[in-house]
Length: 357
Image 1 (cartoon, rainbow, N blue to C red):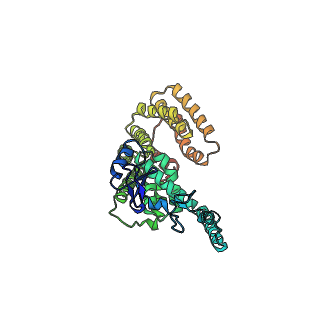
Image 2 (image 1 turned 180 degrees about the horizontal axis):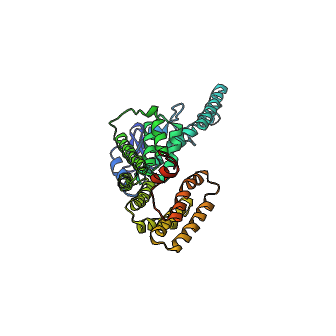
Image 3 (image 1 turned 135 degrees about the horizontal axis):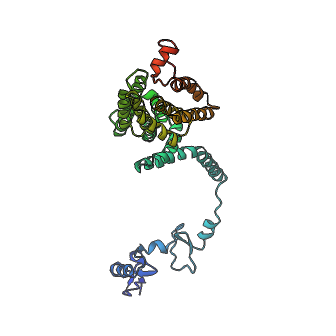
């Protein structure tokens, strides 16, 4: 009987027409059934031509008569070729080239590390923004835009996070630092969103600025408070606007001579934010109540709060400057029981047109 027998049907076949499946030698007719059985048994059902396992991968010698073919990786070799493959010595030039390539790879990875970090910061920052975690995202995005200031995406994401946190300084630096404030696509959805946030924030600040100027005019307290409330509602991401609106409500109460409401604001502000400024505001409200009620208790407490304001202003030049302007008006109210506006006080005692904060 010539040829090699099939492990399944036991019929002889030329080696070129046989296949190997998990060590079994199979003819073409028996392969489908054996492959399906192997698949159902959880074994490999990959079939390979027997000839590829029966000849030396180097010299193509038939290995059927070889007593011990040598397996190296996924290939078989005869006894003559196997040592040549195992002990093959690569040329010096090839070894040196490989060493040089490895060195270049190390240098490239070392220099590229910062690029990987920037990419990671940008990727993580973007996902944090999608989750509304703006405070966590901002430091990563600031680092990314610092390294890549001309990146539209990095600049817009940084500005978006900053604007949602009320940090207009960082938002402005990210936007204006990007090609002088110019972006590639003005119709890009991300640009449109951030530009809308930026315009809303700046519109609110313009209203707040106008409200501040109104406080320098007599009888404009209610108008200033209304304008500041509009600013706070327009850009709630900046809490200081809401605090300012409440402060302006106090000014409106003063203008309409509602000194109970004015004093109540002073008490609340001092309790929540004890400082030289809030102590002076509370002293002002107490002085007003003394002026209208002539109750010494209000006067004594007003004097006490003025002393607290002086103590708290120590080491703060701005606070001391404000108190230098504020104290004489409060003292005048305590001494004369007359309540006059800042503008009237300036006209009488500081010269017409003098506006001192």
